[in-house]
Image (cartoon, rainbow, N blue to C red; front, side, top):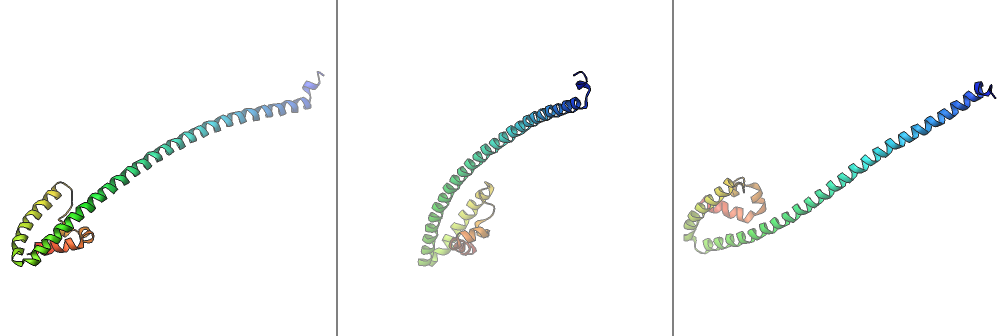
Length: 149
């Protein structure tokens, strides 16, 4: 038996056991690293999911605010259309009043347009705005007509 510990068989057995122990240790360390990486990836995924939920909530809030502003715009457009039609009817039925109405309107129009520009509510004079022309073509035409007199 004393010779066995000096034999090649013993050396090969020890080599085999050493390799097995090394493989087990390397596997254990690799699994620990994999667990850490998986935990970090899961943490990031949870963070991104939370961020995504926050952003989705923010988008819902913005959509609700936009819907409210859209309703306000439609309300203002209805009132503006009634005002435009009223002025148009007065001018059509009483052409002599046109120059007086145009003069009064121009004064208020310039005043209110400038206040809105100064406040940052609008960027340009509405009659010069291409988007206003598309949004309210009848009102735009009426304004251009009354302001040109």
